[in-house]
Length: 252
Image (cartoon, rainbow, N blue to C red):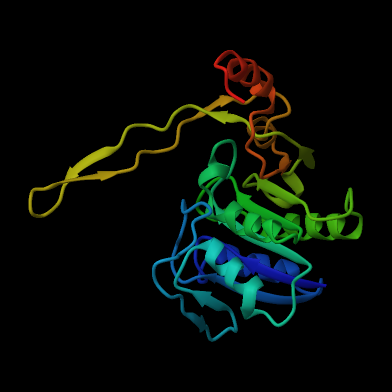
């Protein structure tokens, strides 16, 4: 098996090293990660400047771009052979609910999925790398089990969030849906050294829909949340309502 490993925290992040070590012995590993922290870049691609590929002393390759850039470049010309699996992470902080829309960690995995490659994104729920060793063991467990017996043929995209607990204190895996967050808190206004206003994006909102079956509920109970994701953003539930509305407007 050929495994491509990426992340959004940058090629020097402890979580990337931990995920690479978790994949040791499972197949041939290639690492292509961002040069710098690219959290919150979502699925953005760099289109208005060229990208450069560098190699670190440990053999990791890194790119001066986004997580999506890394996987895209890897799959469309950098790697000699197409990988069988793309894994991303281990992220320094949760990617649950609406976080998945902004997450560079999820985006790196999603880029592989867009190319038809099975992909898994891994995140530690709390920032700070506490119990990263346990998260790496979980990542290895998930990869081995899913690769050995996938639920269906073809590509899949999984979003895995791991509570910061010792491995023995984790309460197993939970298949979950995405929860919902409250709206983000307000921007933080400051002044730069020249007295001009600058703005920092405020913290993410707290959990709003965290009922049973959600990713928020699972991790609160100490379970590893595993959420299958898809790309289709169509509002299927409201399609009939819009169809009736269009008909009433005389639209085709």
